[in-house]
Image 1 (cartoon, rainbow, N blue to C red):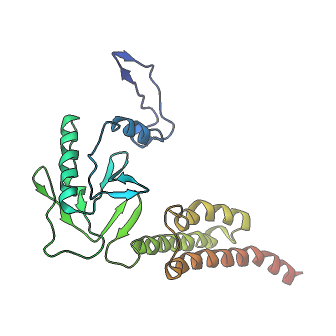
Image 2: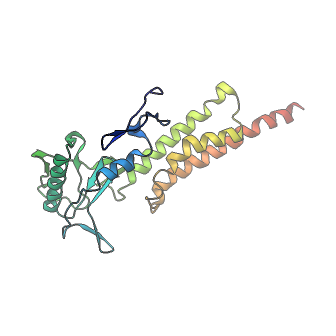
Image 3: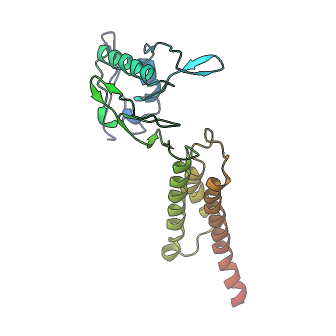
Length: 232
């Protein structure tokens, strides 16, 4: 709401009213940092079953209120779930059980272990999207669904872009480039800084979308000049 104003209260003092130029503050660019500061006292005890990176135990990640816990042992993971639930209780937070799930990467044990939060059993799944990145525990490449989904979305947006030809005529190259960078490229490049392209078969559909878009754009841009030359 463009007319909405906000006030910050700290230590009994109130700030002057202000507005947000980027939507509600829940989606404001500073909100993730504010939430991380709020969670700065969340300390989950280290466990021998934790994943170690260069000697440093890493057992949880947070992006605002999206939290992921991981461990090499179900019992250790349950202890972390209990610690997280205890911390949330102390800080007047409620864990959304409907959005909380469990995944196993690697060989599936039989029977599957049971994990719970405050007595509520978590369901197991083979695919989940965390902060826009889709993981799958039953494919050789755990990011395989992410590549496929992004290729499909990029292809759909590319097709929609060139359907504008019927409304505005041939799409000029520069304007087409702007539309590509704004609408198509973000999907082709999504999470490229954390997903290594180790599977050419997954990368190929993304490259095909890029190549087809450029070919179509150049052909559309050259068409008016060819028609003019033919007319002259």
